[in-house]
Length: 322
Image (tube, rainbow, N blue to C red):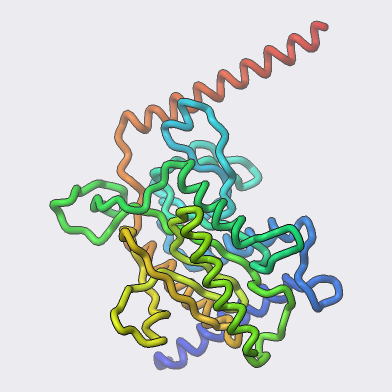
């Protein structure tokens, strides 16, 4: 028989190995810097999707693709591709491609993440600002809400406000990077003052950009140890209380944030990230779908597809005749 401490020790070792493997992926050919190849962005997304799929309960599906609402189906407007989407598996996708890309309805979305290789600025590139702006645009353009207080059951059945249920349908919103620094350090390297200063500067910048883009961000995390999450506002709080992690399944009007620097033990940040996501999604479901909404999605959307197909066929036939 195993005692609890031994079980968690084994879990810690698994997280350590997982964290170490991601650091190896990030090394460039010289072994000293971050990989900035064209393919590394897509590979970074795959690593995060695999990580979430490994730990999330079976009622969720982790995909990449597009989120549409009824308005999108009716207007046929442009929509952004989302790096990582966590959807309620009780909702079917509107379309699924062989490449793994899916088109999903907004009601099925339980979490969205924007993925960056690094939070370190380039000469003409600011990944922090870009990531926060992109995730804010995704939330706005796809009809996702963060302050719906309607109670739901885990099958997306609405209970209204009069019945008690811990479940809500406001998706988790996050930005993830593999590194918050430009150089690859050893995992067991001592934390320097500059590491701490860099974390504080990053926290200040994230708060600034959240306000600038009105981004409903819940969590920002890097695999090398930076973690910033929503927290509870406490009067006369100590330094430890400033970093207290709190999930808001119904986003309050005023949100506080705190950060933790785990650059000496990145597996600790990984454990906190997994815990935050699991805590949030345990009581998060898809939104209730009415029959008329289902009709709009699966019949009007398919009608648009047929129109596009007929238009392309007509154009191709016209070109052949010439």
